[in-house]
Image (cartoon, rainbow, N blue to C red; front, side, top):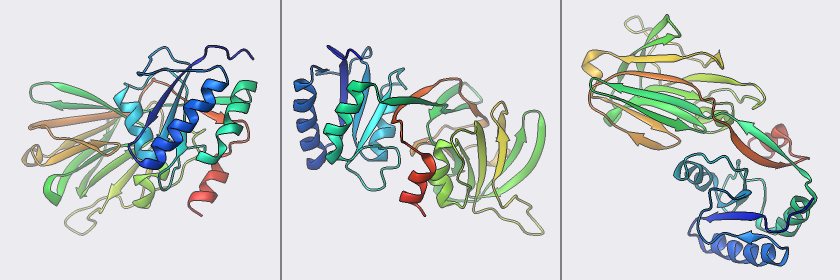
Length: 269
């Protein structure tokens, strides 16, 4: 495989260990005839993100989910998205030059936040969260496609992708989902289930072509936050949030021996 003049973007957080890894990586890539772009090049052949899972997500958001394969080097804590350690740079370059890798594609999740004046679109790799502002209880009407599902009362609702099933969703007691399944998972956040309020208390799995519709009760239109991958959005007069899987594809560069469930066992079990 001819790798001469292949352009690579390196994105790093500000931690000393990340910056040192970036310095070493740039030197090694240069010796192997790669071109490391000084600024983010939208026409590059690969993005290498150095940091933790947060850095990985921020890189994708900042650069508008580019149509470029991406791989991560973990200098953070959990590093579920990151496939490499700083000690595997030579092995990575060797395998990349040989073409000994594959590209896995994942779909982000897409939310349309509609107020009384306009609609705003957001995207997330892991999840979209509808939650209470200032930790108050909220009441939401939840529909699936055109069918009313239930009235939810509690802290909020999280809708995750299979990729995000191991993130916030997992900490809420949601299920881990194999990323080969193209579905969405609706997970309740501190649901209230009493005689006065009836809310589902476990996750719901819905097909990829579904649209999840959430309507806050009128009194709560100004009392909710919408968050995606940890970034919060607050708009007054939110009357509806529609959530579905995006048709956009995120390309993850994986070594051929990568196995999702081995990663789950390593990080969680």
